[in-house]
Every structure is written in C-alpha cells, then in structure tokens.
Length: 328
Image 1 (cartoon, helix red, strand yellow):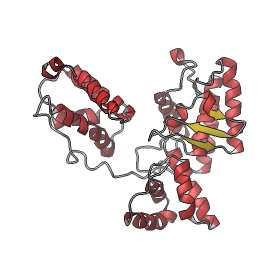
Image 2 (cartoon, rainbow, N blue to C red; image 1 turned 90 degrees about the vertical axis):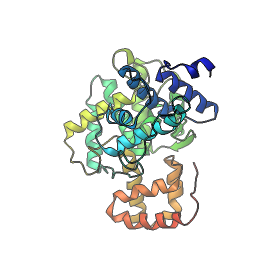
Image 3 (tube, one colour; image 1 turned 180 degrees about the vertical axis):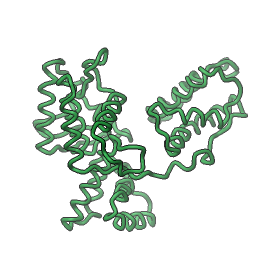
Image 4 (tube, rainbow, N blue to C red; image 1 turned 45 degrees about the vertical axis):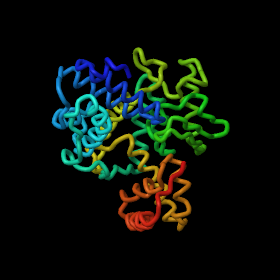
C-alpha cells in the first residue's frame, strides 16, 4: 500500500475496504461474502460523509439496514461480526476506531429453527413456479426450486452451476463454487434428471447453449440469458410464498428458500430413522453430500424435528468430547 495513502486523512472508506480485501486474498482467504458486505458498509459511510473514527453506534446503524428487511438481532449480529477484522485493520490508520462486540445484538452462534416444508408445500411451490410467465421463467424456477428440494444444494451453488457442470447423461452435478471453496459431485435422482432436462430443452430454444455459460438464466430485461441472480430468486420466492399463504413453523420471520436445504437433510435422516438405518454411519456421507465442512453442522439440522432432538443431542455430546471432524 502506498505511503501517501496510509497518511491521507481523506481516503474513502471503500478504498480502505478494497485494500483490506486484497490483503486477505494475498494471504489465501476467500472473501466473496465479506467483500459484498464490506463494500456495502464502506459506501454507506462514504455517502454519510462521516469523518473521524468509526464507532460501534454507526456500525450498528448499518447492520440494521439490511436490504432484505430482515429484522432479527441475530442477522444484525452476523452483519456486525463481518466488520470486526476490518475495524481492527482500520485501527492502524485511526487508533480510536471501535471494534464491535457481542454486547450490541448478542452472540451470532445462536441458530434459529428453520421452517421444515411438508411434501404438499413443496408440491404447491413447484406448481406455482411453473405458472410464472414467460414460459422460460416458470420452467426455470420450477427446476431451481425442485433441484434445491431434491439435493439440498445451497442457492448460491445452484446459481453458479455452468451448463457443463450438469451432466444429465451420467446423472451428476459438479458443484464448483461452494461455501468452503471445495468442489464436490452430487448424484441426481432420475426424477430430478428429467426435470432439469425439460428446463434445459426449453432454455436452449431461447439461449445458445454454452458449456461455460450459466445453467439457470435470467428472463428479464438486461439480465435475459445472463446468470440468474440471487436477488431475483429471493423476490420471486417471496411473491410465491405470500401467494401460497404458508403458516410459518420456523423461528425466522417467514419460510425461506434456504429452508429447502434444511428440509432435505431432515427428511433424509427421518427416513433413515424410520427404516432403522444406523444414523451414525450414514451421517458422514450426508454431510459430505450437502457440502458441510463439519459433521456437527449436519447434526444441528436435526434439532428442528422433535422426534430427532434426542438423537441430535446425543451426537453433539459425543462430538464435544473429541476434536471436530472436518471433511468434504
């Protein structure tokens, strides 16, 4: 970093954020999610024209301004946590910079119970998605929500699939853009293969097929044929959710797209439980399948189902007595 930039009192915070992120990348850290949040924070501060050291109060104000209008303190706490390493970095330029702690919104490790979808709710969601217009939009969202429900993929993983990552002849997805920067292969059920094949066939009528191009494409305005955006998925899902009038059974403000992932894990373990399959032996492979870095993350999902709470509690206790198992 240039000496003049370090000494300048008028450097925009967004410049500091970009320098910080570049330094993290040089150290080998993956900072995509952090990058979005820090740039958002920096632009917010720069737009305010704020001068002087950053305070916990102004950081908390930004944390509450979630563009998705999420109003839970745990969401604000997670946004605030992202700022901590950046605040420490800024202290070399302004020693009076405050570092936010858990005293503002509470700890971030608390997890809220998800909404576990019934089979009928998933059927209704896919039917409602299919009715969206134009036809390509309806087919795309039906295929996307169906894929999430059938595989437990993260939304970001599905949206980052390239056409060449979806091998429907073999029945396999190659998931390259994962939360923990690891690739994995996800086998597909025959019904999922058929649904994705129908969508691809329709999409290819409108968009030239490119193995390096996105599998799921946008269908509006300047985003036509481009990679489908997460913000668009959230908006469409919220519209469908409101139209379907679901009763929320989770602790979040409403059922979420991400709850399809939770539902996949819970339903799979419930099936094993009913069939008398050894959950211990099967859980590690399930954890790898859904891309968890730690198997305890998969066990946590079970706490959403009363019948499996005792199973989950026993597993947490056993894992607490030994070092964490990391994999896949």
